[in-house]
Image (cartoon, rainbow, N blue to C red):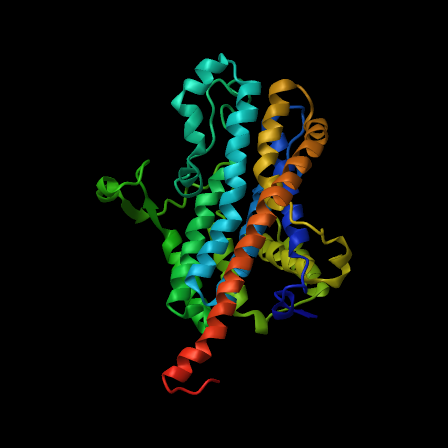
Length: 384
């Protein structure tokens, strides 16, 4: 038995391993979409009948994010710290990726003359990182990947980033309301998050003060799911919030994980197969993320975000150069380049920015703690 509360401690989990597997799953799932049909299809989707490698990878990302981001706010109890660290985690890697897109991928693969390519407003729009992260504006370049199976798009997974940001806002708002410091409050916070998911907000393409009246709020159309998915990632984030709130009451063990899997297999041909699978999937992710059996496989560095960002981009390049490759060969060719890009992103941008931000925030916190007694003595208060 492994209590979830212990796993959420800094060195008591395998969550970096889960994120790495999730990122690789997304890349592998995309290989079926980007390469020309080779007579095979996503075998996980064939077996389940609803979701494949890519969808399950995204669900795992959002589940872990719900737990860890909620834990981050609860530990810090600081809106500025939380906001700075969330921005530091998302934005620098996207900024680097947009530069690679515009100045490396574009010039190498565009069918336009370079003068025409660099004079196009479509090219420079990719450097608008705010639109990419918040407004669901993907990367697209003039004359690039126009003849690929997944035409024009340079980085398909970017569509999840605005969803992630909205989930962060739910954590921020409910944390400011004081809901994340108790199990009951966290349950209410997760319920509010689900309500925000059901009430879908439609934003205009360019959010300006003049465009605010065009913001529309309505009920989500549950007949529409993201392309290639049979469910949505947001509920997994809210479930992660809920799991964090109930962490002291949840224990994870392999026998229970096996039991959930067996129950799904018994009822896989019934109407309840999909929810039963998601139950087994969530518990299985938690088991992999907590069991000491997997501790030796935890990577030293977190390349998952870089793999997620650069995987699709490199796969599009391979598909453009050799569209007739089968999906396994294409993945094997792309893998070293994806890993190199992810490593450079982590070591040169992601980790240095996070380390610098944490160091600055820690120094400010230390200064406040050291100066507080002087101020309190001046006010005639007792220091505790």
